[in-house]
Image (tube, rainbow over all chains, first blue to last red; front, top):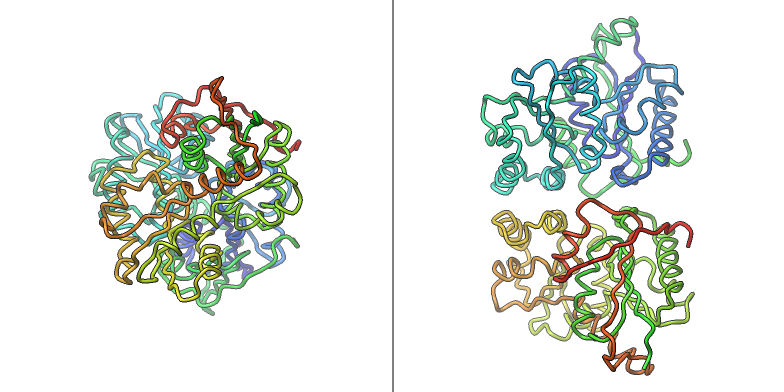
Length: 269
Length: 269
């Protein structure tokens, strides 16, 4: 029985879709979320900058006495997970490995689609992880730069979202994918629209779900779960800057209220 | 008769729409374009960072012996134009003042719309410039975050672009605007689609066009025009990183070939 919170970190608010899945799988855990909203997006930044930002985020979360950390950001996972794991001695997991594993195990025809931001797609992080498990899998990937602003505008279920998804996914459907990795933490918000475009035959892989399951396993193995629900769990939200629409968009992502979002000076950590 | 080139600087490739207007108004001038593609977008960066980046861009352009500089970027103009003008002793102009002036003079009902990125809209730079000229003008502004990725995908004349423009501009039309400032250098690419949504009654103000006219006036007054077209003008393009689609998107923005795009180390300037 370990009451220390879990730390969840993202460059912005996309990580809230990961937090949502963690809460489903681990409903008794206390959680501290940090979104580096002052420095979002990480995509165009150098590897050195991203490692520095990740370390600052982890230092902040460690100051909240967390027992494990989830890097709920594809870019930060791709650029800094290994460095973070070798520097700190608490469990740290990213979002890419679990999603890649699920895709590799679920594909039957060995043709997997991966969608994400330009940064994630050009980094080929999912390709590397999937190929580690099965070299015969063909990966068809596509950057979908409109998907993030569409979800942040709250337009996930509009005609604009549907037509955009149809255009982006055309190529992947033509290539015969049978599984599609939602390789950006914003994309689960578009699940219904993407599902309408690709049909029920194609399995949508949400790395957030798989990451939450991995986290459960790791906490269980180390015997640091908070199993008994005596007091309600506490969720704390911190950001490095408060964008105008943070709480309203965040609540849509999280599907629950975010009563109290605090701003911190992340440079100090 | 002054053969030195004009320097044009943007955080990425949006400034190419400004370059296009400069070439129309000043067809004999040699031009050096620099796009800071390694550090785009400037929107989320601090004022200090943007001033530093602007100074580096100007230092680079000065090394090419330019006779005048256009900061063809709304964010960089808003955050660093004054600092640049007081540091360097060649003419430096931005894109905001000329657009604001044209909007202030062209509105009849004194209700002006301004659209731009989140950064430009929340900076209220156009409001400040328009209010300097006429305090009675009511300004209705709206950030349109989908417009940049739509133009960069080459989707300017698609149904997605039309439906997006309709959604964004609804509010401005309801408020009765008679002039609309395209306050982001990407937006002139969407002129036809935006025109379809707002109708012919509403004047679209393209700050790039007005900036090109201002530049003509300034070069004329200082007697540093390149008036005689003995040799064809030379256009040189430099970027701090070469994104995959730079030349193909750039050519759509510029409506001419970009034969030779060179990468430079901007940190050295």
